[in-house]
Image (tube, rainbow, N blue to C red; front, side, top):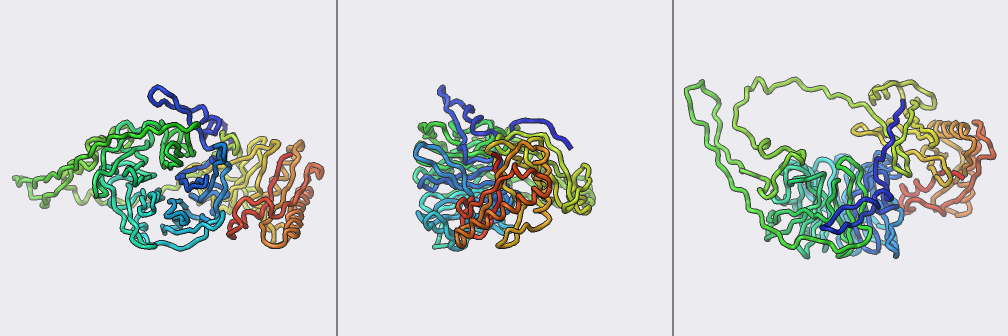
Length: 565
């Protein structure tokens, strides 16, 4: 199969350096956080001081759940020159499920929200040196009622948590709620912020400043919305459903979807943005810190009045089932923020229920059989973020298998197909297991170009514990594909780098890592690769890519990488 429409999938840092929008008459230049971003969704930035920004990265192969993991915690640090360093995975804060930093409850206590399977929970972590140590799960009622993922933030001072998500009884697709701390690990029931904040669309990424009583959030429930914009509203009274009319923050709202701001100081912020509402999110800031232009005047929103519908009058027509009178709000959405067609959300005319009596017989229908969605693929240059032409080769264990479109998971499994090799000319091939296919959107496969300086992690290469002996069919299939690629590209010289964790004797670890690199070289030579094009190094535990504080982090550090020379 071929796919050959190159285009930019996600803006890189260089492209975004040229992306500007206008504030009054003065243009302000935006930039992505360079090394902090990836081809995946990078969302929910949380500034915790000490030049450190935590955020959630989705579907990255280094996440604890691999490429199907919906979100792990990552960290980037800002140096003295203002540059952001390459993001590092925080395995000590992550699980194989969805992980989201809510922020600091106090200077040493971090709150993290987790969703593992059907269970959603919030946990405390305590800072110890450079690591976070797990403390305990907190008592936070109502989390189980949410559908899908959540966004949220701890307010400064640690006494309030704001969460956004979809749950029964909400006003829109996603609403914002607040809970108050009532004990050491106890929190109150969540309260909906009301119709002044929550429209019929999506309200996400809440950030509340208790000093100004202002709420910053992302929304597409307002006039002229293009994607999702950052809105600001002010709390107008004691009640949590008493708010001003939300004002669009023109300074940072773009044509894409903007969300989840975090303040570094009074003149510097980071937020997430996309080029369009369907794109991947990048962490963004201003190229040069500029004065933040925040609205100073806020207008209170009048509460909607209740309207009582009259019962239907009797007539001479045949008797119909009695219909009781009912009370309905004339408008749940504040009149100051009317809905428009540009929001792609049903207008108020479409959501007002009509008073009609349905034919009971017509409401009974046969259950619909769920239609399986075929799997599709997208090959992306891991460095330049451009789409590549590619071919697929199906495999059953280590044997080649024939399979044609449509690619249905059920048929793949029925035929015993376990993986697919994704190849593009000039790029290292990659094996993708059937279990990791994305059945909701395209399965994105990141390919590394075989050019000087490139590094490739051999994800499917495994060894028997404590030895340099290769183990498993996946290992053999992966290395066989690599051998074929190197034979087809004899001009490439690679260095095979072996690594271990830092447990045990450093000298023995270095020797083991060198022997494992040698085992990979021996396999490739046996398959026909020129010995002179292969070099080996053993680094022991001196070059970790994850924290050695957890077993999952140590497992990531026990690896073999290829470096093109």
